[in-house]
Length: 423
Image 1 (cartoon, rainbow, N blue to C red):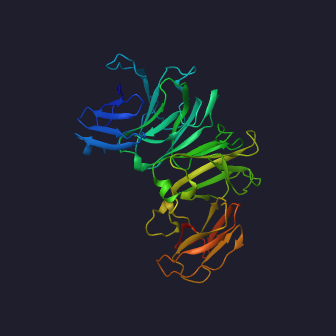
Image 2: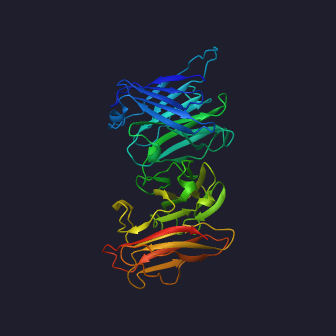
Image 3: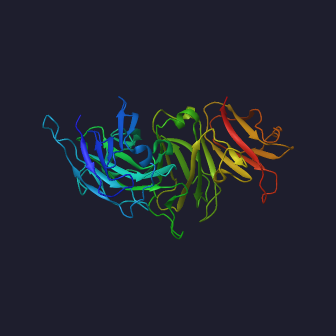
């Protein structure tokens, strides 16, 4: 297999680095001038199977690396194999610290430099991040793959020849990052394919997207919606997901719609005019997720001229405990006195098992399903989780589960909710 060597000119705290890629554009080796070396090995499915760190990396790789003020791009290069065949050129960019890189990359009629593969780098800081990207001329759903440090997360969505696809966000889990320079690699399965990407960016949770005209500083660049890809890192397949999000200017029922892999899922409940609605937790059960990449599409049902907005606050494993004063959660994860969960429809009637935490007096928690008050929650005792508490769900309809604490909203109220799954 041919190798492609690309060196970055910018200084890093572990020393300048030389990157080696295979013919699919996957990162195989990072060598620092201080002797630190990271080597990646891949299995037959294209996933990273192992990572070996040698040399001075045990200490040096933990050093903080400042993000560049501007996007840097290396010239594409090509390396001849032993048989004399010239392998694909690979370009390298640094993801901007703020906003999106407007450059067009890839192998297409719009790219400034032709690249068969592209690697976008960023510095890991121990937090989940969202990668923003928009594809061009991608003819098949499995044509252009996206890897994070060698782990295949999924494939960019289709976009017909000569057209741009829907802008997309990709969850980059902290568990797959390293505390130094990380590599997001984009490459087609067929090295001769025409493809492209643009609008590369790196975002933290709490960022907003949409068509927010009339809102100072609002986003105007996603009138047709945005995708959220939950890749094949293993978390979602085991526990599902809880996605905390909020909508802006959702002033009509069903205005902001969410689909999963092209199937209708739920709508955000109605909010107010030109204002942010209450945050909701969208629960995706593990049995609803397909192996590998799962694609949510979130957008305004009334078309690209309608004002709307989306804020994604967190993406959590589906069995994460929610509430306030929970002993195993950081303060930033607490939700003071109420929360609401969006439950996608099921094909048959089911029961949803819930557990509650620190319920110490009658009617301390009020549970509602689509506004209808449910039976009282049994006492659990102080600082303890109770037994599973079942709530029936009808078939074919989405639902909103809300939990409110009866205490004074100005004080801290210890309580918790965890979704155990369906029966």
